[in-house]
Image (cartoon, rainbow, N blue to C red; front, side, top):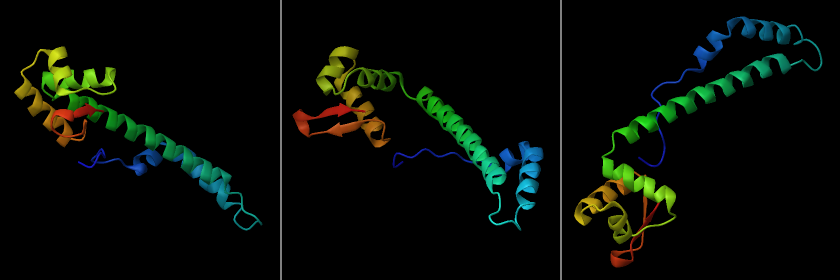
Length: 133
């Protein structure tokens, strides 16, 4: 709602579980150096950072998949508006009507929905209104 995407569940534990053997090796290598000054944290930290990187990739994939799914659920005119706004830096209602051939009232409804969802930004008021991504 506030421009953030929501991913229902993403477990770092599952990434660690997938790499259990590497986890135990890294843990053992670091544990054997704990009495040294300084301990060698590299094996454990390296493993942990690689897990975070993998988890970030998993989350990015889920978010991307969710956005694609959400766009597929949009009305055709809304998709057309988004496409036009990607191609043009800014557009007015009159310009969008001209390019789509859509009814102006229907177009206003779709634009309002896109603005409320945070997909499109509205600038100005009344006749001076224009839209951008």
